[in-house]
Image (cartoon, rainbow, N blue to C red; front, top):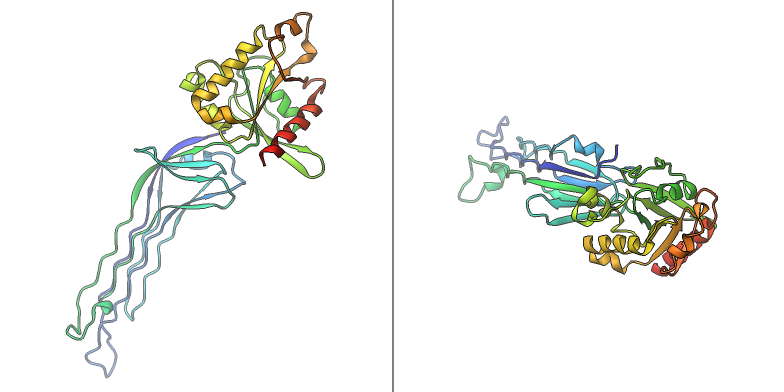
Length: 324
């Protein structure tokens, strides 16, 4: 199950209390204070893991609490530190403070860590309060409370190339042809309901990641058709492919609609290099070229016959190398 958003409550550990203790040894009737410090409370830590591809594992655990530090003991023994609460998330995870929307972390590298909440410090034992004027202190500090915060956790997939188009434009079919990804494919709109990633190999030992997102509709940038949930997954891509069915009656209008939705959602999307891809050319008819007469600079492909696919991959790699 693909999950790309959840809200969780996090609590770091409380510090352990310092100990009040005095030496009690034979032949030392008036031993001094020897109470140890309390241990530090555990932190709450997010760590990215390239083996994960969804937030499903944390969606059903709404509260993450680190362990408390242990109290100090006699003979100036420091209490054990509390165990951290470690939350593993996929690469591309954005962490925000829920009530303000402030972005506090964006984990895009493997094993990248973010300490969301620090555990409370342990209290000092009575041995730390001995002085020349106060030889037998009978008090110690309590541990400091941990922190509490609610975070929204959002996944934006990491890919080099994003496929953008209306429902049933041939995006999933292309991904299945050029990579080992196997998205659901059928001849009706909204077959794809979640993003799919595929690794496209080219040349010798070279590759790039392609993302297929569910088809967009007009108003997607305002949330129509779950647009917000889909558009965020192409924000990080380097190159965009506008996939338009060759049988579209007004391809220029389709391109303008798609471009407008991306720009409305995030103005920076307009700056990304892109290619217009005329898909399903195996279905061309006598009217196709006339309908496309207003469109310039597009590439023809048929994922069914593989016509033009190799040329498309070559053009994508050129754009990616220009971006590096």
